[in-house]
Image (cartoon, rainbow, N blue to C red; front, side, top):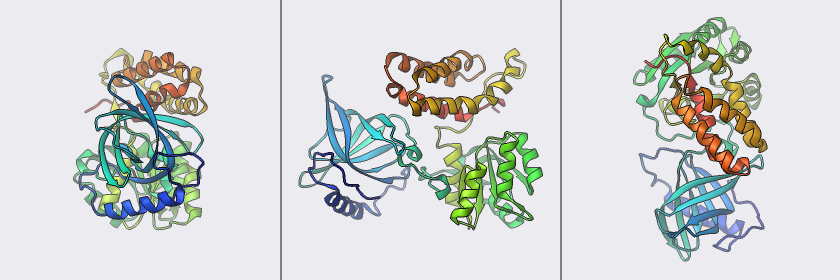
Length: 378
């Protein structure tokens, strides 16, 4: 990713060409020095000028136009002309590829003098952001955001669909150390039948003997199965990716099967949208309200789409209506955390004059909604 020519100024007072040369040198020096415990993948994010608002002691704020170097789900690296004290509270405003502005709050965790007047500022976000949204990443390009995934972090139910006995055995071997419940199927009919019984993710081969994984994806979507579906294949042509995308696939996984990438791929759709995988109701099956869960869960995709559209379009009334509905029903149905997030988003919307004032809280609510499951926790 290169800096684009931009009329905006930054505190380093240099333009796109000079910034590319500077960041290339910094990247070359930093290469190979990454921590083995790094949690998130860092993506190149070169912006000539982004507004960083620093909250100084005493409550006064100063906004500085900084250069950005890279970004991850958890934080960002920026370049500035002077020192900024670690532990300073801050916020940074981005413009998404679709033109929307978002503001992310965080804390300065480091400031290092590099050379001359150049200082590198490290900001840790208060809440994870979606690098897919910020960078317009395509999941069909295996754009995974979690760097280091431990097998024991993977919890839930995965349905593996493949007609290849060798691929099946290899996947089962790689997933032995996880906390996943694994179900298997070898054809489309069997896969849809088992998916209807419940799973958190479908991992399907593109080639299913005489059948095609794209048909499986389309069949699942037509059957109302809305869990993430990853398609595994050696065919990495644009045409195949477009077919998978049009059918409703969530992501792409290229062969040969690699254990680390497998963990990354599963975690991207089971963990990266939140901080702990699926969330289950706390209601007992004997609770009178338990029978209402089916309808609640069936409407959840519509709820998520409504919040996403409201956030995108700046429709404050639509977001407020959904938040208040969730605030009223989530807790009685055993989703206490979801109810608390809905109340928080409601209050942020009520206090602010625009949707962007509550964007962070609405995004957190969307993430929580995606993780909702109705079966009782073990």
